[in-house]
Length: 179
Image (cartoon, rainbow, N blue to C red; front, side):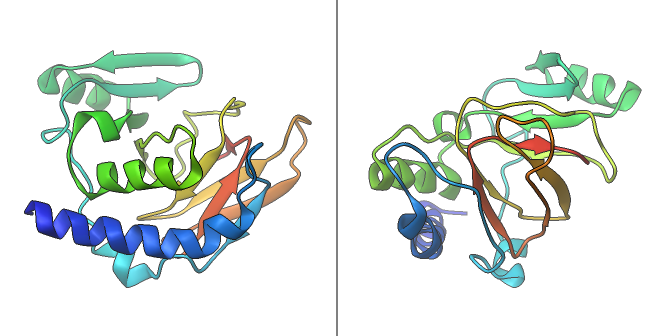
């Protein structure tokens, strides 16, 4: 994919996000929101996602509080094959130059705050990320598959349970993945 195609996809992503994100944005952070129509499924299904070969730097394997970062693709493949768990390509906006990096830069300018782009990949029923609390605002765009979430802040009890699919958008200050 050439840079013009990446710019076009980034422009489409920002246009779609801005209609749902800007009305809900607050300088102190986002409030819980679940908007199941920011992106349509055919558009997200066509998005080219970065693969480990395109990303310079380690991929993180998450199992509860165990974070294992691997930069060597062959070691990563062996480690994942021996114990499948959630894979994370962190800070993609600094490690690649695709549409996702351009979208991250535009969001940072638009919201006037630091925005980071990471891709999480997990198998169906994967629970290795476990319950956790994030100190940052989370913007979740489900590109493929589905994910169940239990959102609660700071109370450990679920305040909102939802399932994200390619047609949903979720913004929240604390995210706890349950499956």
